[in-house]
Image 1 (tube, protein in one colour):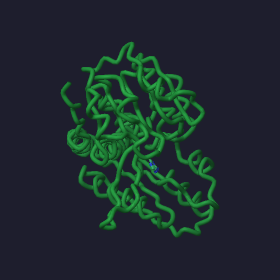
Image 2 (cartoon, rainbow, N blue to C red):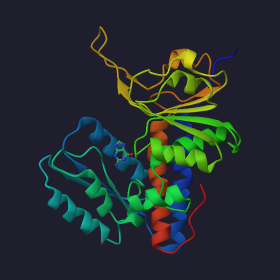
Image 3 (cartoon, protein in one colour):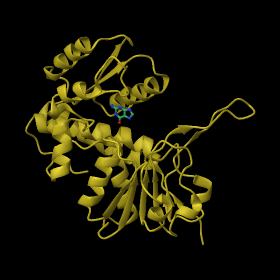
Image 4 (tube, protein in one colour):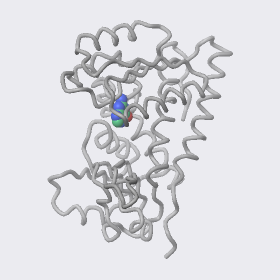
Length: 297
Ligand code: GUN
């Protein structure tokens, strides 16, 4: 059997970012609206710093306004809430993203529910989570949104009746991912740390989305021939002899690519699509706030 097709997340993302840049151009020309995204970083987490840098760079490249707020690690709940209140009331800001994780003294869920749901471009507010769960239009979390776009492309848009397995039940990825797959008429299983015989669940899946944060957990003999594998994991392997530490996903790429029909690599798969979807969500939010038609993805 031929090896799996490698799903090129970078190419998908570049295509979506181009579409977003066109939409931004139209909004500026026709409606005098420039979408603006505020990104809030609390503390010095090195990975978060890089993510935030990339988000700001891509926001500007798409022709939008970027507002970067860097706060010290000892910022209090009250100080962060004051900043969010200011952003909620700022008409130039259409989207607000608070980079997670937050330091321990801050109650994450409380912060997320204080973001104006119409500006919640992460889609983490309970209002948007509820809209997704009940099938009405709202802001959808960026990583699952990027995944469903790439999955649909593998099946020419029709996922009806496919067996889908989501490994991981986080509010950020697993739960919204399962809902999006259900919305496309998949038969969805959500697996987690207490699942009995995960391998057997994986073996019957046409689509697997792995989002558990365990390096190379999904092995070649777990996977049905021809299945579509989406790897959301971003793990660092222990340093090698030269002192370098490689990034890897939740899927054992070298094994699984011999069996699967298509697979996302790490890096270069889901990651770039997450940022592109954040930009798309910012345009969606800007349109909704100005009573303009929301562009179709
Ligand atoms: N940290 C890791 N992923 C994400 C994300 O999608 N959004 C935010 N705000 N923080 C994150």
